[in-house]
Amino acid sequence: MLILLDSADLQALRGIIPDHPLDGVTTNPTIISRACSGKREIPGLLRSIRGLLGNEGMLHIQVTAATLDGILAEAETIKEQFGEDVYIKIPVTSEGIKALSILAKKGIRVTATAVFTPQQALIAAKAGADFVAPYVNRLDDLAVDGSRVVREIKQIFTDYSLKTRVLAASFRNIEQVHRVCLSGADAVTISPELYWKMLFHPLTAVSVEEFERDWAAIPEREERN
Ligand code: G3P
Image 1 (cartoon, protein in one colour):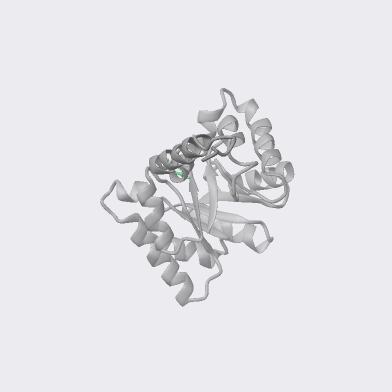
Image 2: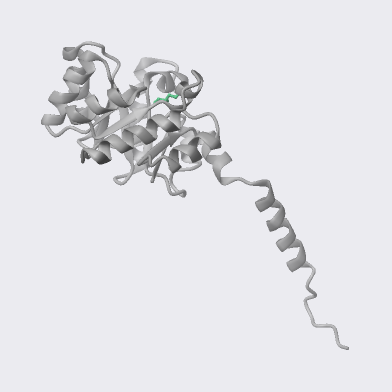
């Protein structure tokens, strides 16, 4: 199970990535818009995230163009600027699928995003996507069980031996992440805030306080009877 951070907040990322078992970062235009005050900052911001990840972590960068030519041009720029091992995130639109097919055939890593149904995921997998990203919370918000969609995507990929992996995205709480893990997702991408909520438990904090208190209460020298 891969865990990635869905954020471009450098300070938040620096507080987690170097020391915690994370596998990468995903971004999208909305996430980028929250992390910078002007478009000129974006290349430097993404380079900083790339540097933070080193050679191991995955970096998924979403295109902003809507047409085939625009997507292909942006993908080329992203590859030139950030190296071969970047994943190009492309929404599962008609133009997006066309671009995804071309890029996949060229060996460029692609994540199909804004996925809401197993059918969209199947088409993206057939087009050659390395990952498909179903948006769990946005499905849950529509009273559609996002974890069920993840489970059904995984079942289809397994039944038809499709190598594409499921990178579940869009979470608001730990329960959603938990259900998606039980549904067989290959990866989740979560906010830094949700990562800390996954790690922290009040009873862990209380238990550690008790250990420290009881340890401190042991006398330095044994008391002579
Ligand atoms: O990459 C997609 C993901 O960031 C969407 O999450 O919380 O905007 O539904 P959210």
